[in-house]
Image 1 (cartoon, rainbow, N blue to C red):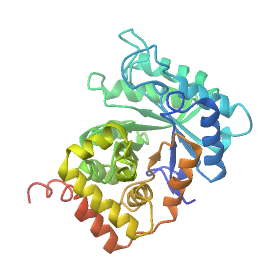
Image 2: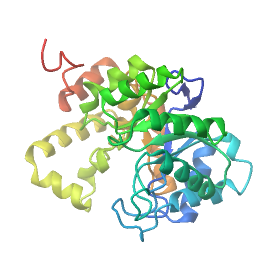
Image 3: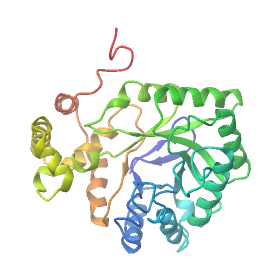
Length: 326
């Protein structure tokens, strides 16, 4: 396992991050513990969660929100593990029915952090991430609230998720006014099938020294060898109904097989070869799935293979404005 600095911070994290969105929802506590045990044994040092994880991602407060954090908290309480990991969680999404039980007001930031600390059974969060941009709360308020949490020792670094490039620039501009480090990471949707962030988010992140953490690296299973899994549910149905998509996936899986590698491993390896990417998030439902995902760290893709992947899954034609102008 290799370790990379998170943005321009001094913090180093493993080149793969363990995501826990399935914990408490598709993965029970015993299996979640096995996955975290294996991850730690293999050198994965960053565990990522969110206050809303543990139930279906829709506004229904009866579906187990907070359960993922609770499971991680009970795992941490079993032994001396807390100082071996970089613990990351998020806030923004609704955690109750009240008008202030969501988003990024100073009121909610304080309450959300305290609630996450309680569920995680720890006194500090290493990376506290805004799960989405809040267009209704001024950055002066957001950074002031984060400053308080840092001063109190409750969080160490601040990150974002699902921000546009200009959101990153704006956040860093306001951070610089107060001589703050600002954002150290951005979690974005990024995989071979969806390369939209290459136009503006990745360039903005590189310029401002923000590490990029791709989520959904397998495009919800599309890049995981779906043609060999006929019982693939709605994703398989989507492929069968879209001739163009099916043709691309056939070409992709054929290339992977010619390399003697699983499609999922190639998808992860490709992300690790992209400039500006710090580490992708993997979200295994079972401990054995983590074995394949870890194998991706050993795969080297040469220029020819990267070019063939670009031909199958074209990118955004470069950075803006050249991507669409001159």
